[in-house]
Amino acid sequence: MTRRRRILLAVTGLSPQILTETLYALAVVRQPAWIPDEIHLVTSREGAERARLALLDPAQGQFHAFRRDYPAAREIRFGVDNIHLIRGADGQPLSDIRTPPDNADAADTINALVRRLTADPDSELHVSIAGGRKTMGFYLGYCLSLAARPQDQLSHVLVSEPFESLPDFYYPPATPRLLHTRDGRPIHTADARVMLAEIPFVRLRALLPAAALAPELSFSDAVAATQAHIEQAHLHIDLERQQIQCGRTTLVLAPQLLAWYAWLARRRRQNLPPVRHTDADPGEFLALYARLISVDAVAWEKTAALLTDGIPKEFFEQKCAKTNNQIKKALGLYAGPYLISRQGRYPLSRHGLTLDAECIAGE
Image (tube, rainbow, N blue to C red; front, side, top):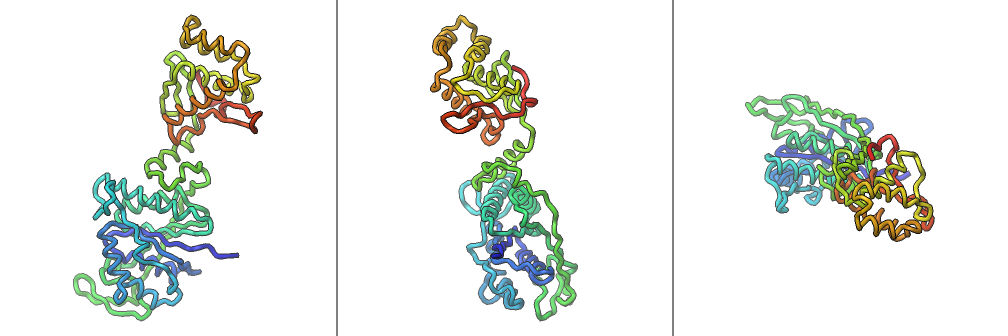
């Protein structure tokens, strides 16, 4: 069996050490070792520059030093192309993550990358939330929860004092050496302890519709779509106010479409099967339509005349399509449970709501 492609993904800010510390914990401390095939980093413009110089400099870069110290890591792929910049609405890299719009941009960048990296079923992702600003770590963990497969993991690296946040400490080198604390006290890397705290989390991917996993979806829209999907849908038909309530959203439909939808909702609430234009009783729909515009209205008379001999196929399919379009326009990714569904194979397919009957109220 072919081994899955291993990917380490981390967020960093002004301390690129987080990456080599996590790599050390995975490749040296952990048993059995988990050595990534490639590394991806999400950071700001300043963080990217620090990572490029401190980690990837050909002569002094600590990532290259790590690979020399620990030969098992020599094949890991990590270069400037694997450093993903957080960009603002204008497309320019952000120098820091400070304002609410900055945080929204960071969330969207992280969300898109996590979904792209988890799209390949033959990959496994290890995500570190140790670096960057606190919101960046939160977003990374949350995005992983939405998109993770069973093989994906989440962790935080822990480094013993006084090595934590020490500018010159990147990992315990194979040959221990002497360092100095900020106040000049000598310390030895042989005394450093690097530990990996693996974090249990809920994997929601299997519960979500494909639309909620689209890479181009913003973080806030992905969260909203997920919330809508896991909440129990509830539909309330209010003919008096000429509107329907889909969960938390109120939708106003034209009288004819409202009557059409109310008719199909009534059938579903009564546990009647989906209907086809050839066996539909136009009287049920017309009675509801009359309550909305009265039987004296010219529009009702024209519709009643059209349906004298039953509901024409074109009329039937047009009403279903137009109603669905209005629901999709109003609800977007929330629309799924409320749509009129085509069931069965064409040309004998039938239409109806699939929402549970007990979730439908009003008329």
